[in-house]
Image (cartoon, rainbow, N blue to C red):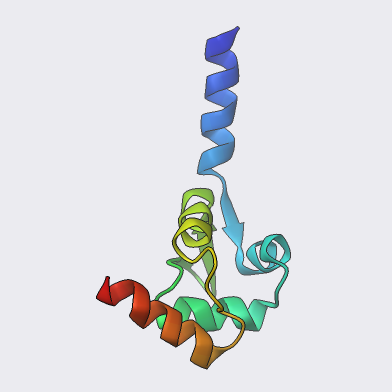
Length: 86
């Protein structure tokens, strides 16, 4: 029973999210997700015309940038530089 639950959790963890789904989860716009991706704050996989994001990457982004202001391009870039210099 425990093994089945672990397998289900692992399968859902591997599900990829579209840019729109990530925007909804983070409470922002698709355009802002593009900015965060272009700046390197959040990593994606290019698939055809769009990008896909792993659940793990979204969790990493939330953990690394917790407490940071990434509300616009300039502030996101400042947060990125601060994190990279540490």
